[in-house]
Each structure stands twice: as C-alpha cells, then as structure tokens.
Length: 203
Image (cartoon, rainbow, N blue to C red):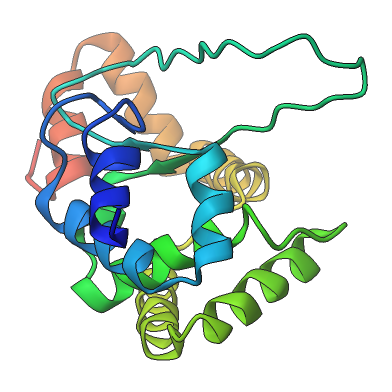
C-alpha cells in the first residue's frame, strides 16, 4: 500500500478521528500533509497508538471508546494510546500553523522527556527533523499573537480590597450620609438616585 492508502485506512476511514463522519476540512487536509511527510518509522509508531478528537460545536460532550483485543501477555506489557484533542481555536489557524500544530502534537507521541520544557523542546526538535521548520514558525507566530490578545487578568482579591476601601470612604462622606438619610425618609427616589450615579442624570 502507498502512504496515502495507509493514511486513508488507518485514520480517515476508521475510528481514529472523533466525532465519526466527515471531519473538519482544514484539519483533514493538514493531518494528511503531516502524515504524508513524516518518516516511515514515525508513521508506524503514530498509526499504532494515536487518536484524534476534533472539537465540533454540534456536540456538548463526547464519549470516545477504546476497545481492542490483545493476546495473553505478561503483566508488564503496556498498551499506550494517545488521544490528541483539537480545539476550535486551532481550526481557525492559517493552514501552515495548523500543520505545525499537528506535527508538534504528533511528535509528543514519540519524543518524551521528564519535564514540560524539555518535552516541548524535544517535540520541536523532532518536528524540525521531519522538515516542518516553516510550519513550526507559523505556529509560534499564532501562539504569540494569541498571548498578546489575551485579556488582562485582574488579581480579584487585591482588586476587591481596593474597591472596598474606596467604597467605605465614599459611604462615610458627609454628603453621602445625608443622601442616604433623605432616601430612607422618602424625600429622594432611590431608583432615580441610582440612575444618576450610574449615568450622570439628575435625580
């Protein structure tokens, strides 16, 4: 069989890509390119243990079964399955970046180190050896862009304490105390006062 026939048999026509049925077009195209370009040994290792779950907004949840029959084996025999989950954001990447992402994630099934940073570096090194340097650079660009556009994170506890201190000072101001007394006495509308404070209208 040719590599393209292997890809169709191993991945596209079986149960390796979930949800079952036609997969996302750009994902399928990028996956076929990665699997076509990696060395034979790497392909054999990946074909033996890698599955994909591609986010599909039609589904709220998905149960991906694993059911394989193996002959009797020793207790120390290990069956390893890697499931690569592809989220919707990845499907919006430019094609080269998506190819780089899939190559990188597939490399994790072969290159494994003890800690996260070493593991990432080993995967990137293998991806470059496979000839995906350009695609890896495109992926890095997309990831940096996503980080730059990430909303600022407010340290909620610290922020709330500052807000509480300001609110406390404002509540103790003589004018605010008088306004509160007038609201309680019914001389001023509570609703119109709140509208004034929010939008700047006169009560």
